[in-house]
Image (cartoon, rainbow, N blue to C red; front, side, top):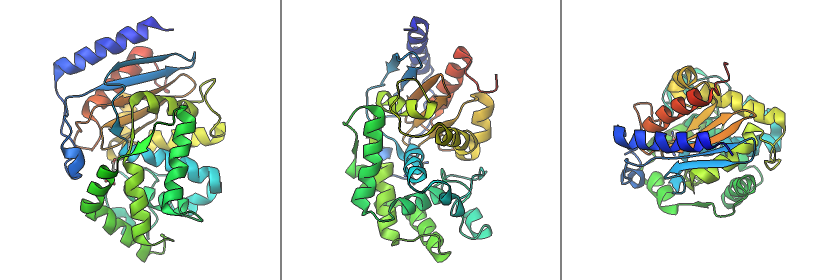
Length: 305
Ligand code: GLN
């Protein structure tokens, strides 16, 4: 056990609640717009097998774009490097739902962690699978990695996004026009909206992250080489057009979602999940980003030394 870490997390929780600078919840998905922004939770799994948590670490939240890491992990496990013919590995420098570069780059999205790229990954996941089976594959991956089968999809959130997801509908049709979508647009989007609507707690998410952090005792869900690749992409592309800023302030691979979650990896040392639903102007958790910076500094976890 590391008592210092548990007491640091408790102090961080208090500090963040006193600060009350929550940001704004995502309002383009009506079901997420109803969530109280004044919430904060954090869970940390360490290499010694201990788990530390504070605040709302056991409340379920919508993982949204964090699911892009897991759909990519499933696709890498299935077809490996072939996926890179359809999607790139460069930061986009534009918003998560931008269509701008797709025209210029002939329908090959910049990376798998922006919406266009994740829609392509989901399309690949549908090869030889029904939408239901593709979603079961992601949930099975998460359940095995977390060692917890109580992980589900919030159908209301999925339906809410489907009803208002005009940008994603545009992106998918645009990809299809370039021949970079193999399956029917509605199948791909239906699957994508449901994967985004997976609900997890910080504790569950931190436990899944152990596999990407390569912590001793974590279930063997991927080779070290694949984990390295996921970490590299999370560092360079995990926070959209704020990825550079996140690397600058936190110095760790991370992936955010508009539900306010952040999965943060300190390779070989820790897996961290943070949740606070209020977002900053980039669509990343405002207090989550702050907490990530404070934790990485306190523990001296930056990969840059
Ligand atoms: N489901 C969301 C969308 O497609 C995911 C975006 C995000 O979390 N940044 O808009």
